[in-house]
Image (cartoon, rainbow, N blue to C red):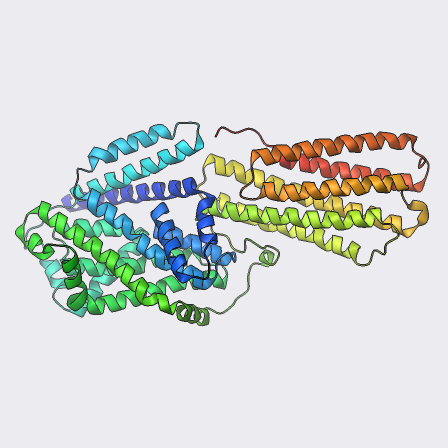
Amino acid sequence: MNAFLLFMNLLGALGIFLFGMKVMSEALQRVAGSRLQGMLNTITGNRFSAVVTGFMTTSVVQSSSATTVMVVGFVSAGLLSLTQAIGVIMGANIGTTITGWLVALLGFKVKITSFALPAAGVGVAMTAVRNTKVRYWGEVLLGFGLLFLGLALLKDSVPDLSEEQLLWVNSLSGRGMLSTLTFIALGTGLTVVLQSSSATMALTLTMTIAGYLPYDGAMAMILGENIGTTVTANIAAVGTQAAARRAARAHFVFNIIGATWAALLMGPVMMPLIDAIVPGDPVAAMASGDRVIAATMITSHLAMFHTVFNITNTLVMLPFVHQLAALVTRWIPEDEVPEWSAFTTHISSVLPQTPELTIVQVKHEMQHMAEVLGAMNNEVFFSLTHPLELLGTRVEDAQASEQLTDELELAIGEVLTHVSEAGLSEEAAEQIRGMAGDTHRMERIGDHIKRLMGTAARQHESEKRRMSPESLAFFTEVGEDLKKTFADLAVYLGPEGTHAQAEALMEQIRNGRKVLRKFSKSLLKSEERGTKGLILTMDAVHVVEDIYDRLRSISYVEPIVD
């Protein structure tokens, strides 16, 4: 029964640690917002800048798995090339060592509860504030507090064992490469189960200090943790494009190669190197029985090993990025992509693990949709106001553009549906609802513009159906006004859209509607009365009025508390 209680306590401590890591990482992603995507989008062909970007991104979100999942999504969306992605992944491996140092320096050398509980308490209070950014930072603090509270409970949950009880550990040690492979497999398995290399690292440090694991066995487990952490990205890549699966597979191959050479050189090279960098003998400290000295020595040496291994592995593999990309490309051939992805330019897969960043990609796609409507508007108004010009393929082109808006609505709707299945803040959920509504309104605008092309085509069929020169001049001005409106709409719907842009759009639309109403009243006194041209003119007026109504609904935003 005691053994069962110990196991449950250990499991509960791990659960609190993992939950704290999840809350903190997701909150940091929300705090960073689109800046994370900006960091990734600024990567050039320079592999060194890609490594630095991966390191910085992982340092911000405190999760190499989150960074790698982002990379998988960006590769799938065509925002990153495979070679750029490999560089980012290498940097993410280095960035994840920061978490190990936080755990090593704070979790085992100071009284954790002295800052973990206050951080959690302040964090909870901040989440009750109306200001969105303050709430997000409150979640960061709450996650930070829970993470280290879980670590404190983890330390207390590991009992001291007698020499007889530790015989099973000795049976795993002292067998050369077989022991190393055993501990690598153990580290890999634990990380796959826990889905967090940071949690496995904390568990490894705790078990080593308690005497459960030998020093060299703990090093081997860290190598296994680097392999196990690649599973998250490979799971995220299931069902995505070949490019995304290649990025995830490259992460796996990169860490396998690193673990292989590090395992071979661990005894003769790596252990002496770490001992030379960090003063003290961790093996002697463990044998002394002094838990304080042992904790200091072991955590410092293992954290340094983790850092040196990942930096060295990156330096060794960095010259072979293109060869690694070629290997995974041959391994994973091209395959069929989702049917709707043929119509999108910024999203081609669905990764609900990173909803905030997926929302940024969807905004880019909505921007693209507005640009399609703008181009369609320009062609249609040219046809409408130039009845003597040959139509050529303009009718078919308008139909094709309208069909594209239909496909884009379906694609964006499918992505938003998948993202909404992830755990979202109320603000993000409300944003998704608004984006879905605006996408539908743009699809309806496409229908109206297509209808306007029908009006233009009828005008070309017969001279008797043509509008008056005054009406043609009026619609020329309307077309120019809408051209500017659609251009501004594309900017507003993008990731950097602001309320000020929405207000400016609303003002444009109000002015357009006023001019339209004034013109509509003037038609009652027009010389066109009783002609077929008047019928087409009135029809065009009604269609443009419908377009303005949809645009007004998109540009209308309620004030929010920043």
